[in-house]
Length: 81
Image (cartoon, rainbow, N blue to C red; front, side, top):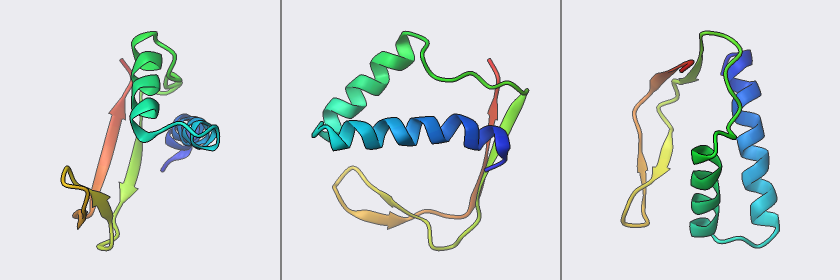
């Protein structure tokens, strides 16, 4: 990630880790994160946007069936709203 992406994402990762340490289930964490987003609590970008580079051919992600699948290399762009 670029610097702005790291600033935004690291807070989210730390919050999810904190909720896991409190024993929250994945569903509870999704609900709490959704509630926070609806209340406007996510950090806002200080720049026009940021980039996340996921260029490895070894990316793995969970699917809806509970399995893990390969995900192709990609770059994500986030824009300030």
